[in-house]
Figure 1 (cartoon, each protein chain N blue to C red):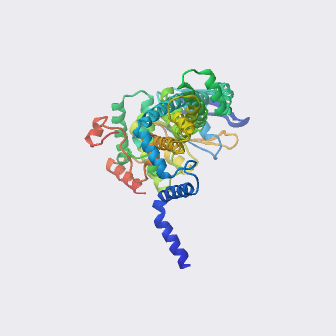
Figure 2 (spheres, helix red, strand yellow):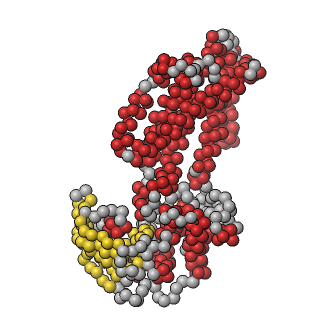
Length: 237
Length: 284
């Protein structure tokens, strides 16, 4: 479980977060919406342990947390394969095991044909898949996502949302999904928090799906061939 | 209009040979100059070539080239490694940077001639002043490039790495160093050019061997053709090292910069896991 209690934070003296509290239970997806520049990313960085809040308490009982950023943040000097392996290398996983897990993840994400490509050779959607793969290969139990699909066009965004939901359900992961799109928040979330602007406060907290009724995706999961064909579609763009 | 268009078309056709034409023009001007002046003051290109052949036949050439190259490389490599190391440390620790900045500024501020005088007084062995001069010339350039390279590393990449709890060594090898190389190469290339010039000057004034010393002997004998031949040798060495060593090294270290948008590469060699081997991949 992740608990943020009464988090208050300032940037250059400006109050960004004002007593924000939230809880993420194992296996649940919490979506956070709010105006841009309103402190959503800061909140996520605090949850990730990248930023220390000025006031408040962070309690993260999840074993491993992984982060998917708004921009893919792939390393331009590495091909997709070592980019996917990056987090595993940080964990000290051996080369052979890293390779095996990265290849399996790439297949799952429809990236098998892209493993030897550099980031600049990949489309935006493919880059974001590599970034998702990098986060998922470390086998986290909490995934933090900061508007990961905001740069993608409408159709592609839907495909990626479906894929992500399926992966989250498949692995029973908890997630915080930050977005500025309310439709996306409803589609993805089990719970939804809306933040106010300057400073960010929780103004609305809705349970969209009670525990046990997981995911915005209907029970039918995408088959591997479908995922592959999605991959090819992405590739041809 | 038609004449103009024909002119443009001709220039376009000649474009691949522009470099050769430029070299021919230089030799042409040199030849005309030689014909108009005293051959002792400005020998012709042909006379210079003959002088070069003579030097090579007498066995002087290889020894001098070897000695000068060795001195350049020793000074260049020690300054390069130290400059890069200290620059990285400086960029990562503000105290170190502030501490080192006046030292590096002082080294950079003193003219090569100033260092030359000091080096002749300080060091007995004839090889030390040339190496020392290359060292003090190259060090500040590489230091500045290393500081710049590390401090301009993308904050997004550093933050991403921190989110994955990347250990310090991996942070250096996977995030900082690959970015640093982009900054280091242009600096190292210009520093190497400078090193060749400085080493010849230092040898001329302080050594009994090497290209610079041979140049000093040519000057004493009023052998202008020989002097120009030695100058050409130094120039060829400089460009040779840049194009035959530095440029391929950069391509090897930065393959991602030389990949077009269609083709990737199979990094590494040999499959690392069965999944790769099963797909017949060379590496992963």
